[in-house]
Length: 156
Image (cartoon, rainbow, N blue to C red; front, side, top):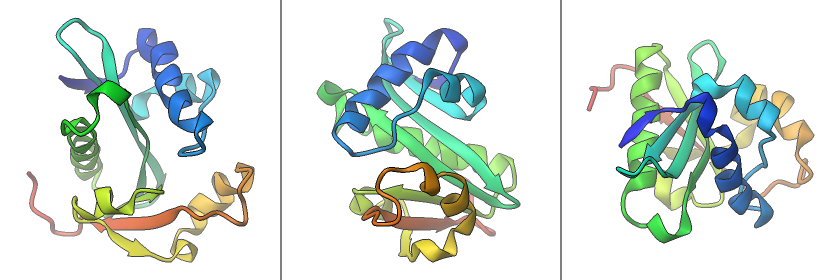
């Protein structure tokens, strides 16, 4: 089940994000960052309530949002959970009348399967000036930037 994150989910969400952050596959998120941005997050849960996936749709600018902090528990990968989370974020972006959704990733093939296309990071100055400057890999980041155009796109 995919649902909006709740305050009681934050510590479990951070632990899941941290698994990938420690591998250098995504930026870490502090508890404060997650609490402050709780409205951005969706979680995937089992019937037991256990969180097995997390993803955020963060609005950056007029018509521009980022899908970020996508993490799925290792024993639940390759089951479509990440795809479901990203699609839910895209639908949420449509509800906000967002025109473009982007992601920075080391796994561009995953996002390309969802319709994203690779672009130069210089097309995302809002991201670079707000988040990238804080990253230890800046300016030598080797993440791939991808964008999904939502203009006139059909829902579903």
